[in-house]
Image (cartoon, rainbow, N blue to C red; front, side, top):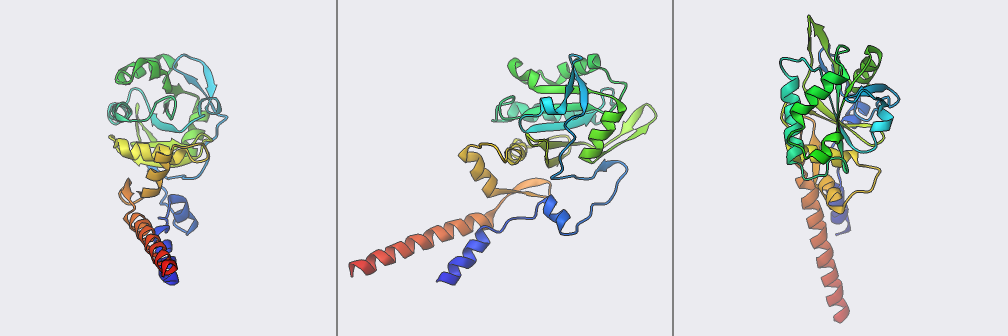
Length: 258
């Protein structure tokens, strides 16, 4: 009985390999010119400065004090950028988490020609679905080539100029309050559950509601499908252990009565 319980506990608490664990195990990501080389577990350079849509100079350290959804775009993009920002606006509007309290959004232009005025104009198009008191919590930034190169390199975000435009990937990343990269989510549309789970992961190290802890235990990120999947083995293991403990208690109580 003792060996059975031990085996069940090992099954229940066996974690899935994260991106950082895969890296530690010797998994090497292929270098790309246009795309994303994931830097999970790395901390972005927080002392880089940018201009917000009001033209104020701010550093990432001043801005990032909670889980943050980050995206890279350029404002005259004819293809992916508008659908990407539309996807962010859509998922934020559907989230059951409080924007500004539990998380925030930062969008950085990687085109040095973009200005705070253009950022402000572009922002108006995508924050209309968000309540007015929370629109300040989606921050648009522009900056110098040096700082843009530094932040995109730290994030593993690879883009290339093509004439007046850029070839670039479509991705959002989530960073912790300390600036650590905890998740990449790809595409132009995002499931509220996937984004919520990514934010819950990014909250590690700070107080979290019990419901978030349960979600984090029951679901894990699947690198193959780029989504969060139910940890059936963990749940079944916990339920099995629970019933075994109940049975052992019943048997002990009956033995004492005899």
